[in-house]
Image 1 (spheres, helix red, strand yellow):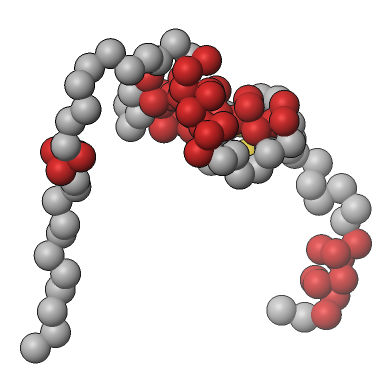
Image 2: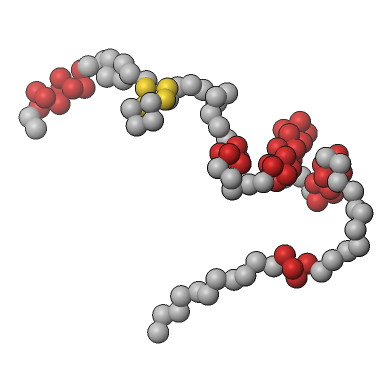
Length: 108
């Protein structure tokens, strides 16, 4: 590529005249009010139950209103109670909630 081509290309002040993302057909500059959050995308894609999404949004609202990026466990419990959850069953073992470990690849 010669110097003349590069100068002409850079001299074009209106290079970004199109704000449409050609891959998705969306306006790239639509602003934060229209973008879906990762949480919303996960919920819509079925990776999160409605109950999980409601809890996540309640925690997010609490953090924003109270300027607390990392709420304490006591504060998390308050949010859970505010959502209407109450202890009604007898305590159960947490062993049933343990995720199965994937075997790690071993180099031999």
